[in-house]
Amino acid sequence: MRRAILILLFVLCCSPIKAQQHNQQQMEKLIQAYGYLRNNYVDEVDLEPLVDKAIEASLKELDPHTSYLTRSEMMQMHSSMAGEFSGIGINLIQHKDTIIVTRTVEGAPAERAGIAKNDRIVAVNGTTLIGVERTKAVEMLRGRKGSIASLEIVRGGVPMTIDVKRDNVATNAISMAFMLNEGCAYIRVDSFLSKNTTSEFTKALKGLGDVNSIVIDLRGNAGGLITSAIQFAELFLQRGDVIVSTEGRKSNATYQASKSGAYSDIPIVVLIDEETASASEIVAGALQDHDRAVIIGRRSFGKGLVQRVVKFKDESGMKITIARYKTPSGRIIQRPYHNGEHEEYRLDRERYNPLDTAAIPDSLTYRTLKARRTVYGGGGIAPDIYINAESNAPHQFTRVILENNLSQSVLIELFDRITVKEILSLYPTIEAYNEQFELDQRSIDYMVSLVDEISPMALNDSEGLNESKRIIKAQIANDIYGNGAYYSTFGCYHDRALEQAIDILSTPGQMDAILHR
Picture 1 (tube, rainbow, N blue to C red):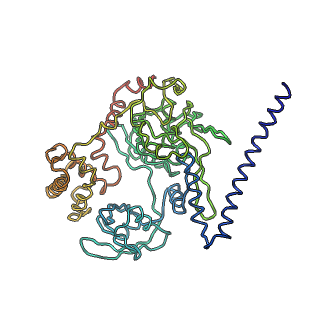
Picture 2: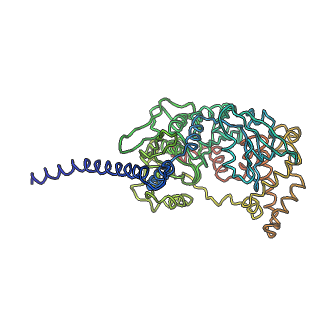
Picture 3: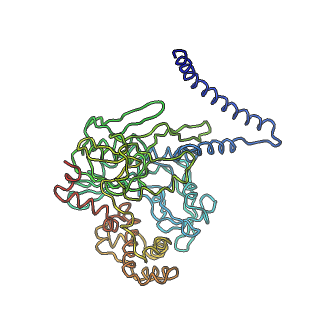
């Protein structure tokens, strides 16, 4: 018996060594294969594209979030993390085959050079943009700080050339911040990619004045930096509260609030949906597990993998998964996946559906840390209050507008007739605009004619027509008064999740009842 145990121990000790030797042989095999190609293949071989494709293909056999990054993708990632990029500072759309300016960033190079809304950009530095996809056009307009982007534009049918000197352009993590009612603030956090997210949030909140409750909208927030998420969550927690922990092959770590946050006592509702992911799930999970916020919406995306970026000498790189995130109660954020099955993972729509709590095993049932409420694991953050995705479904007329992007055509036609300055002279504030602006009959007739070409039956939908007019009014507001104007003009009046949040925060005792206080 003793001899058998000794043999077993010897085999177990040798197994890792054998595995290491096998992996080393495979690496040597790869180097040998490329060396042979370089020295003996019938034609001279450029190894760079072969190696790039080999790495990319290899990483696709792993989890859905491990990936290869090209040089440009690495540059974009670093720009996002720095909270700025070098470019000219415009928002643009691709309408048919043409790139059109929708807005210039205040104080950015494009505004200083005189670029205006509805300008058609037909070429940059002699290279045509006609027929070029929007993402490619954005890449062409960005460049080294101090370099010149010579833009050939058409304005009101008149061609002209405007030279724009590229500079650093700040990117904002907070796209909307306004008061829903007396004392209740709404703030939309678009990402945690920037290290400035927390300071932007604090600045926006202080700018709203006297606030006694907050709705934090994390819907569509794809995440970002764990350090940014931890810093943000710390605003609402007590010193020593666990925010998130990581579990990996090499090391485990636990992150706690280093101090009590400035808003650790203020009532909070957090809105999430199926596109809330990564760092934003860390925030939502921490606030839920500490009974600090009511979570409203749908189950979040379920991206809970800790990733490290490895940079290669040619400035390309790769994101590799090194651990998994866990909420303070112990829930694994990452939803289940199978290595290499990326398409199945991407198309999984289970998180859109309400949670069937009766089918959840005990192993995926957890308790919050203070009130001992039941919360659920299995991937993503399950909301306390579920809002059906179909609850905000548009009317038939509006569906035709949205599905065919017809509002874009209406806006282009409108801004070919009237300038931003003219609208601002009539409505200097968003409040004045919301109260007084009405879409003119010419725009309405044009919108109806566009819908008639696609779906004549939709013309009978008078409610949808009115809804579409309000949506286009909100889109105009967003282009003129900046991010957040769309939501304050239209969205917050047609959002069941937000309506629920306002009801909870304005009804005495309702939040305490939900959080079992």
